[in-house]
Image (cartoon, rainbow, N blue to C red):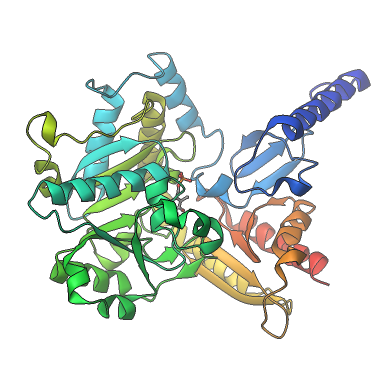
Length: 437
Ligand SMILES: *Cc1c(COP(=O)(O)O)cnc(C)c1O
C-alpha cells in the first residue's frame, strides 16, 4: 500500500518489506510448512473484501478464504465496527466463573440458529481443534457420570481431519500428519464408511462413547464428498447403538456448503456440534461446542461433576462481538440466498477446465478441489510438488490458494462475486497450464 509518489518513500517501504521477510525467515516457524525451501515469504499486509494486499501493494483474490475462515470479506464495515465498539468497552475478560454480554447473546443466537432446537448449551473455546477436544472430553466424562464407564471408545473416519491437539489428532486419519503421534494419543477405530461401521463387532460398539465425522465433505482429505444420505444413516446407526454423534462443522459451518450448517442438508441433529473457522467471519479465533440438555445435566452438581476444561481466552469478548456481527451480516445481506448462483457459477466454471492434468473436480457448496494427476490417472510423484507449483503460478494471475497434495483448493469467501469466481477459475486454468507442461 504505497502512499506517496516520492522514490525515497517507496524505497523505504521496499527496504522495510525486505527486513520483515528477512526476520520471518530468520525467526518464524510456520504451521504445516516444510522449512527447507522457505526463502521468500509473501507478506500479506492488508485486505479488502475478497482480496488480500501484499506489502508491496499487489492484490490477490483470497482463494482459500485465509485458510477456510473468511466469510464476508476482509475489513467488512459491519464487523470492523462491531470489533471497534467492543474495544471501546473491553477486549477480554475471564469466562471462568464470570459472564459477559456478547457471549450470552452469542450463545442465545447460536442455539436459536441450529434447527431442531436440540442443542441448547454452548461451550466456548478458541479454535477448531479445541472445539473437537472439548467434545471428546465431554463425551468421556458424560459416560463416566451416567454409569456407562465402559463406553470409552471412539470411532472416526479414514482420512478425517479434526485438528492438531492430541485428542483431536487421535481422531484424525490423515496418516502423513498423524501417524508419528499415533502411539501417544488415545486409541480410535477408523472406518472407511457406513459399511465398515456396520461390520464392527457388537462388543466393541457397546464400549463406544462417540463417533466423529466431518459432515458432507472431508476438506483436508483433498475435498472428498460423502455420499448423499450418509449422514442420516450415521445418525440412525448412532441412535440404534447408543453411541453419541460428534459433528465437526469447523469447516462446513456458516454457509460454506450452501446452508447455514451442513447437518441441515440431511436434517440431522448431533450430540455435539463443533464450530470454529467461520464463526467470527474469519476475524478472530473463537470456537464453540454445542450440546444437548441431556449432556449438560450429567455435569450438574458439585465440584466432582464439573467439566474442568477451559483456556485463558475462552469466549474472548472481541471474538464474540465479531461473531455476532457476522450473524447480522447473514441476516441483513441475504448471504445464504445469494449462494446458489455462486455455487453454480463455480461448478460451471471448474467444469470448463480442460487440461489433461485435471483428474477430477470435487465440490460441496463453495468448497471445491481440483485434483491433478498424470494423464494416465497415476498421481504425480510427491517430490514434484505439482500442487504447490500450480498455486505458486496462480499468484502471477492474482490468485492465492494452497493445495492439499496435488488438489488445488478453491474456496473463496462467501462474499465473492460471480465475476470474481470467473477470474479465479481463469487463474486456476492458467496456473495449471503454466505448471503442468
Ligand atoms: C481446520 C479444521 C479443524 C481444526 O481447526 P483449527 O482452528 O485449525 O484448530 C478441525 N476440523 C476441521 C473439519 C477443519 O477443517
